[in-house]
Image 1 (cartoon, rainbow, N blue to C red):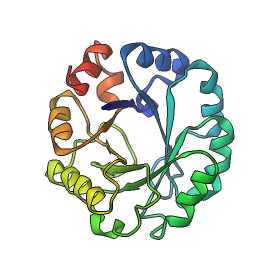
Image 2 (image 1 turned 180 degrees about the horizontal axis):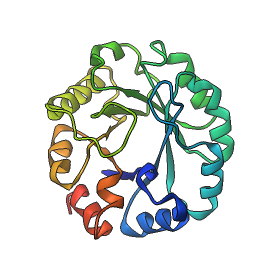
Image 3 (image 1 turned 120 degrees about the vertical axis):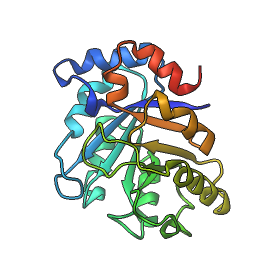
Image 4 (image 1 turned 180 degrees about the vertical axis):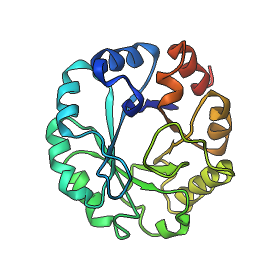
Length: 216
C-alpha cells in the first residue's frame, strides 16, 4: 500500500494534538517526526518528550527521522516514548549495520536515510537489515525547500539499488519538496511512501491534498 507521511515539523506546534488528529482524519498513514541537533542539520527541532505527548492521541505509526551526529544515543529514548520506527543517516554512520541491528532488537522499524549529494553506491552492501530507505530530495534542515532537479532519476536509482541488494520489499520513502504537483512523478519513479510538510499543513483542503499525493 502506498503511504503518506505528514511531517509535523510544518504543523502549528501550538495546537499539535489537533493537527495530528486532523491529518489522521484526512487519510494519512504515518506521522513523520523530524529530529535535528543543530550540527548534522542546521536546525534544532523535536525530541522524545513530544513523541511521548502525542502517543496517546493517535494510533498512527510514528516515523522518527534522526538528523543527528550521534543518532544511537536517542534510539532508546524514542523507543520508550512510543516511536514505531527510526531512520538515521548513512552520512552520520557510514557503517550502519550494527545500529540497524540494534533498532531491530528494540522492536523498531529500521530506516536508513541518504542525502541528495551522497552517492547511492555508498549504500551497497549495507542494506541487509533495512526496512525503509529514505531518499532525501532536499538538503536536511528546513521545510519548504524546492525539490532537487533530477529527482526522478535519484528515486528510481534508489529503488534499483534496493532490488539489486535483495531488498525490493523494503519501503522506499522520499522526503523533501514533496507536493501534489510532483507526487505522481515520485510514485512513478518507485516511491512507496512520501513525506510532506508545508504542502499539507499549508493546504486549504488537507484531505484533497493527501488524496492527490496518494493518486486518488
